[in-house]
Image (cartoon, rainbow, N blue to C red):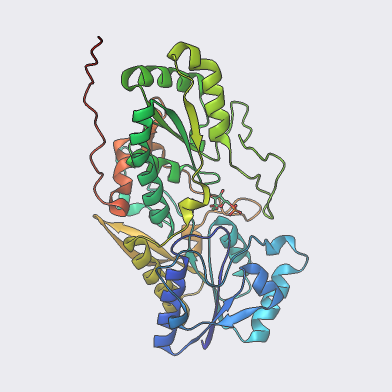
Amino acid sequence: MKRIGVLTGGGDTSALNATLKGIAIQAEEYGLEILGFVEGWKGVLEGRYVALKPDMIDENRGGTLIKTSRTDLRKVEGGIERAVENLKKIGVDGLIPIGGDDTLTVGAALSQEFTTAFVTKTIDNDVGRNAPEGERVDYEEIINYFCPGFPTAAARFSSFVRDLRTTAYSHERIMVVEAMGRDMGWLALSGAYGDADITIIPEHGLNYERLKDLVTRRFKEQRHLIIVVAEGLKDEEGNLITSSPDYMDAFGHAKPGGCSEVIAKRLKGDLAKQLGTSNFNHLIPSYLQRCGPPIELDRNCAIALGRKAVEALYRGKVNHVACTRRCEDRIETVLLPLDEVLELDKEGHVIPRRVDKRFYDSEEMNATPEGLEYFKPLLGPKPMPYRYPVLRIQTA
Ligand code: F6P
């Protein structure tokens, strides 16, 4: 093993450069060369790369130095073969794809023909496996406890939600806040750590009648409300609630985004009169959720995972994934075989990890205590919720 290739694919995160840094440092320690393919799988397909050195990479800067794209090599004629040919021509001995379900789907296909090691990344947190079913959640059994990039996005999102309460309270607003996370509700659930009053995740769909009841009850109690919705939410007929229904990406995914506006408008139409307010708002933090510097835990784990992936290739542990694991309240890193981490469907696509059923109460539409506990090692102890005294308003 002399020369290792690396690429970053799919949506960027705050911790990608940290993983690249870990890879570059470990490679230098082993005396290996690192080549970064530019724009993910596209760079491998077109044979475009740069030589990477640790001092080129700022682990505290979000995004990815070597850029990214959503390229599905399996949909390009002869794509996998061309990629392998290029890798061999350039003299790459092992490849480290860093990505979410789509990038790793391509990686898993390519791993049949080329030496690979993987590091996950995605603010969607949907690569890995939940703890075995049962009454108690064994958090140490979660495979890939979190994907790098998720802790930072969750810290940002939960803090937006927490802070929003001050203005929601002052103006007696009903605010519907939209979290990213294409298919799954992990990031939306982090809003519950920021004390969202209601959280709706795609795994349980939209029960609109229940939502209306909860909004009515909770607004009457506290005169303001923060509702978090996951962008991947589907309506009662199972259709994605989105403002761009006709858009599809290279992997055939409809583009989510805009369900907060649809839901806020629908609630306003149905409840404004009854609740005596028309102050229904929606808010989409969008890419603000996945930009900026990584939080310390995310950065340090991402560096350690990058190092681990290089170590895997160096020691001949091929087709392994560098994963996070919880040990009491700490996070460790561990190498696991690809098929223990990823579950593939019939077409060979990675099946995204759902929010664990035990983490969500569909009656109350919010995180359970087990769900909140999941976030503890990522976000630290949960701050006290904002509380307001009852205002005894007097009249002249
Ligand atoms: O997959 C990561 C993610 O941020 C999703 O949460 C989101 O739906 C999607 O990427 C956005 O895609 P794009 O960066 O192409 O707009």
